[in-house]
Structures are given as structure tokens and as C-alpha cells.
Image (cartoon, rainbow, N blue to C red):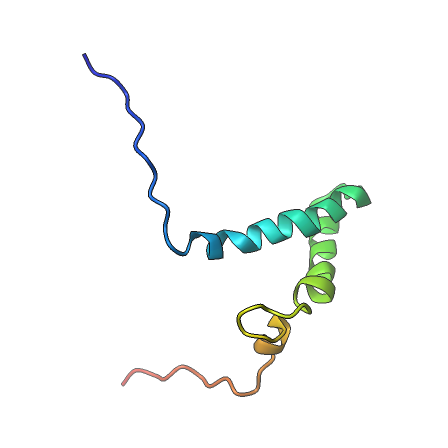
Length: 84
């Protein structure tokens, strides 16, 4: 007789870092979006873009000590090397 057994899932070491942004968006943005009564995806996308630029990207990151938007606007970025 064959019986189904559940295997314990292994927790990866970086799982929390990968899932933290999703939790942050769910806790902060989605509560605002539900309260605003958004009715379609265009409104949702517009609202999310505005929220990300005004709230999420302006807070100070715990590890880097700077705003995420500042890192994406950095002028010190170099292009990837080309293959020969």
C-alpha cells in the first residue's frame, strides 16, 4: 500500500531577504490601495508608481544606509564589459 508523506521544506538562508520586499509592499501599499477604492489596473499601476517614488524608494535602507532611489541614479555606474 502506498501512502502520501509530506516532506519538510528546507528553509533557504536568503529566503527572508527575498520575501521581505513582498511583505513590505503588501503591508504598506496594498492597505492604501484598498482604502482608496481602486477599480482597475491602470489606477493600480499609477498609484503604485507614485507610492514607490514617494514612499518606498525614499526611506533609508538598513544595510546600505542610503535611499534605494539614490543608488539607481548613481553616476558612478560603469557599462558591462564587452566580449571579444
